[in-house]
Image (cartoon, rainbow, N blue to C red; front, side, top):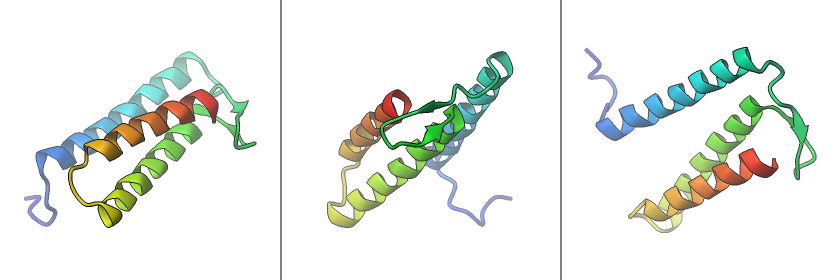
Length: 92
């Protein structure tokens, strides 16, 4: 049925993680409305959803750059992406 796309377990886990993060942000928004807007080091006023988007976009670029320049293994860009996500939610 879903043979048109190369669904593998890592791909499914990635999408499940993204949907779980969005669901978590929805729960936070219902419980604490307003998105916790703040101005960070980039000079932008961002909400939790903005910071999640910046984190996901930056992580995609980190992985693509790593694959283009270094190849495998992908443990190092995973560590860099986790650090980038921590930075985004802490300082951006």
